[in-house]
Figure (tube, rainbow over the protein chains, first blue to last red):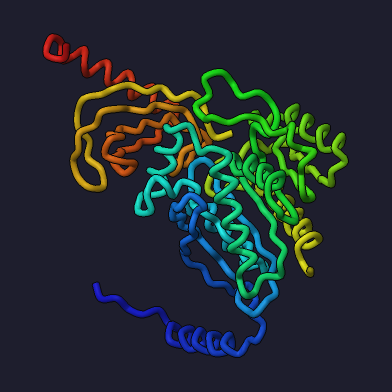
Length: 276
Length: 86
């Protein structure tokens, strides 16, 4: 049977071309960005590949260090990195498992890292420091840098905020900032709550009340420690949401919590990173 | 948190991965967030040869229910084979 073009197809095509032409004339680069992989030099000599997304335009732009979760340097986290660039932030997401091999698929690298017990905190802080420096060295940088992490990256975001000179931090349901690591747990992690007095920047925390890692009680413990240390923080906790409620590709996605959470993130960064 | 207990076991056999067939020496079994499967948690098995590097891996992510069915199927198939499978 011959393929017959639908009536009106040619008119639609003309109209589409007109739209493109119109777009070319728009001066403001609304949500325009460019993204690519860059190479960072680790302090130990290791090469660390990183996904970098930059807004179109001359800036000045704040920077955001995006920390991936335990499943690795995956597409979902890179999408989050682009989201920051679309909103006017220079964003970078280093591959924390790069030492498994630069040509290794991110999921294979994550599995191997998991089997090895995760990455040492000292190595993470060194790599995060290199990424923060790279953000500040960009020609469009405004000098301010925020950090955000999800899941195991939430703990890493807190670790960054107590270890490095960053200007704002966001912890999205990071486990084992507080609480006790279960016996036989495969990752070599330790709680960080004793370092709350060393927090160097305001902290935004976003948590699901149905989450077990961290549980609401563990979030309470962190809040208490921040209060006692006199730190600037803001926590939002969502009913009907568990772990990974930001993850759009997973059943754990909770649109109401995620939409509200994103608003808080951009309010937080707008307050502490814009200008300067 | 993204992680629960991992049960590792030595295995002898082969698996076909991105680079073709290779010998596998271990199976890592864990219940955790999947990389790809559309579930909150899955029973994950990594058939691997760690000596050949991270890419020498064949991964499966199964719903808990289907993982249990798989265990039954394996046992059934081995039982049906009788002496040959001992």
